[in-house]
Amino acid sequence: MEKEASSSSDVSASHVGRVRNRKRPNEVMTDGNKANGQTLLVSDRNKYKSMLIRTYSTVWMIGGFAFLVYMGHLYIWAMVVVIQIFMATELFNLLRKSSEEKQLPGFRLLNWHFFFTAMLFTYGRFLSRELVNTVSSDHLLYKLVSGLIKYQMFICYFLYISGFVWFILTLKKKTYKYQFKQYAWTHMILLTVFAQSSFTVANIFEGMFWFLLPASLIVINDIAAYLFGFFLGRTPLIKLSPKKTWEGFIGASVTTIISAFLLANVMGRFQWFTCPRKDLSTGWLQCDPGPMFKPEHYYLGDWAPHWFPWKDVFLMPVQWHALALGLFASIIAPFGGFFASGFKRAFKIKDFGDSIPGHGGITDRMDCQMVMAVFAYIYHQSFISPHNFSVDAILDQILRNLTYEEQRNLYEQLGEMLGNLCKADKLSACL
Image (cartoon, rainbow, N blue to C red; front, top):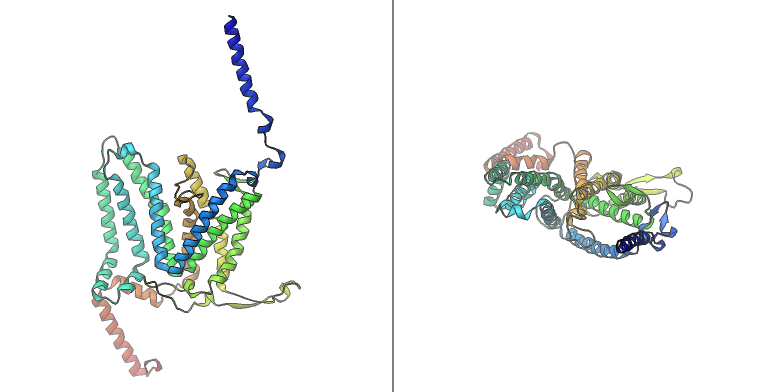
């Protein structure tokens, strides 16, 4: 009995000891580390190491990106393709189960079959004109490429149906649920990730300005939100991302909108950024930048205060459109990151991968870029691109729908019509 009592007292004493250890005064945060009940991120010394690693990675990424911008449109397109492959790899691996895969040899290859079919369809639609213009000097290659473009939709549909039949034939008992889950997961990736990011390539060839400015605004917004949140953040913004703060969100929004207005003026001065690329070459570009990139005079007059030194300013019309891009990049695009945060919480993972030190995976850096790329493309097509028929649009339809013989016949008929007009009206343009 005495032993039992002593053991009981020892247990209770040890229990009390454990409770007391949890309430040690030195484990309670000091008032200096609190502000309105929330801990400032800058007060966490362990975060400085993470910030340093993140900074190194960011500098390397920006440097590599600047080099690709200098190299040209084709290299940036190659970068986008590599990014898409890395993103697909990270997302395919989320639902992968090795135990199930062992029973389904070659099943992983089916996912990549659908992926490259989607790539062929998407880029075939976006870059058909550029591809034809690249091979127009070679008669045989021109006919081959023109035929492939004309029947591109049928070819892609046949490839997709082949994958569908392949999937049905590989169904096995006891793995039905896993296989159909993978099938749906693959299509979700293609819809929400690949389709959206592919609009980036369309923006590149419309003029690097329409790719570089939106992408830069997302980077600026991300860096500004991190810095404002690191040094000033104390009010949580959304439960999906506990580290996001209102201070970081508001500070980044103001910084992004101002940066959009200023960057548009700087980028709009270079034809390398403003001229559209009509083929897949890497040569230098020269073109008429158009009215969007020609400065207009504004006299401030009484609108400006007396101490303001500039009464006359020159602004490009595209700068006003840049404000819309900056507003979207600072307010709406971050919800792509919130979506990714909720996605990761659903799968109970911290990051999609570890390919970028301090940042996580490629998908972690591209969540907002995908949302921004779609908006930039739609905005350009709705408010910037001319809606009337242009020479480029008509040529694109001719190259896409007419055979080589039909195009040659059309060229001869146009030549005869212009010759008759010259004879009848004696047009000065014909002299």
